[in-house]
Image (tube, rainbow, N blue to C red; front, top):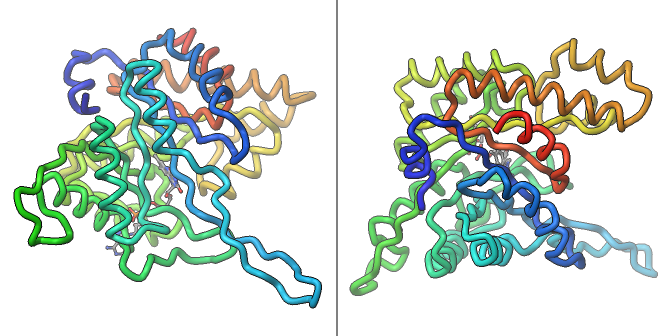
Length: 318
Ligand SMILES: Cc1cc2nc3c(=O)[nH]c(=O)nc-3n(C[C@H](O)[C@H](O)[C@H](O)COP(=O)(O)OP(=O)(O)OC[C@H]3O[C@@H](n4cnc5c(N)ncnc54)[C@H](O)[C@@H]3O)c2cc1C
């Protein structure tokens, strides 16, 4: 079922959903199920599965030269989606990227998803590969998520890359895209970022999931700005509980989001990570309760492969 239909069916009640990462190559799928199992008590209508593009590593050879190797550390997005739908009978939502995909790869990926009975996709540009500073599209790929949304929407209209295909069938994907309450790190301003967000909606996206934020006011202001720019689709807040002291530096660096001073000081006062985890749970629970009171359609949690803190929050909120 489509995310938009789940929202319509909920009749104003806030739903619970979460995102998982495929395990590192070599690990089995049991770790994924172990994380999902306890969260099924809160009846998620869907579970997102992230996509991880290839990375480059450089291996030193005997002659001192460096050999470039291309590795995918977390493959398995599509397989995990199929396994989730099969085991739990909930919708699995794969993320799909511009990065590392040609248009032909994208089309074939979408055909697989369609055949698997997947009804939703989240369309993203992806980041630059780790060893590079700027994002580079494939030679015959997409530069921005809006272009990827257009290709998915073309397929929804039965338009394939080979326009001579006869009797081609239409897909029917509901498309989600990313939004950034504190602007995307490369955007010169929030206004320009929202301008391009609107382009993704015009191209066919039907809902937005936000980057994590730790101050609800940022989300409320973002939604207000989007609405005043004519963006009417649901804007699903994305939340992540802080779990370690190291994340105080890591999260602002990696995601370019601010942490409120009260949260920072509460973490600084903690003796160990067990205490930090508790602070993170309490902070995120308060954020969640306020967002539910404000009537958000869904609370979407970034589990980062650890579900016990999400479980503790959901117990208080749902
Ligand atoms: C909910 C969510 C889920 C995510 N899941 C994943 C995942 O599974 N895997 C992964 O690798 N990454 C994931 N990411 C990270 C995401 O790939 C990065 O944040 C990436 O840098 C931007 O992706 P985007 O889709 O927002 O890009 P875009 O919407 O293409 O925007 C990228 C930048 O370009 C600007 N821009 C857009 N269009 C134009 C234009 N036409 N001209 C000029 N500038 C333009 C925007 O303002 C922005 O600064 C996720 C992020 C979020 C918020």
